[in-house]
Length: 119
Image (tube, rainbow, N blue to C red):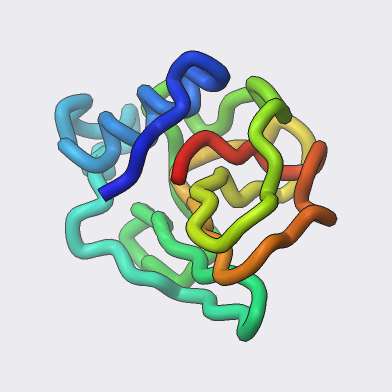
């Protein structure tokens, strides 16, 4: 169970919550907007675990948000100061989709690059 920091990141928190429940149905291309049956596809020892690829291939290189393919970086107000921080994985600025990570230890180098939105 996670506490989502919707006061800092309301849009990001809503995306994650909706993907957890599946309440948004399907993408425009017919892919379920839901984490059900998705895998944790990446484990970085002493770093983080990553999951949330909802694409049919589930290989860790896909996914989509409830807002479309990607959405903007909303806020960098939550620091990566401890184990268990929940954040959005991305491919660069403003490329958040469905993939997320959970830190395994403090990762301050992620601050201002990845949006953390829960614990």
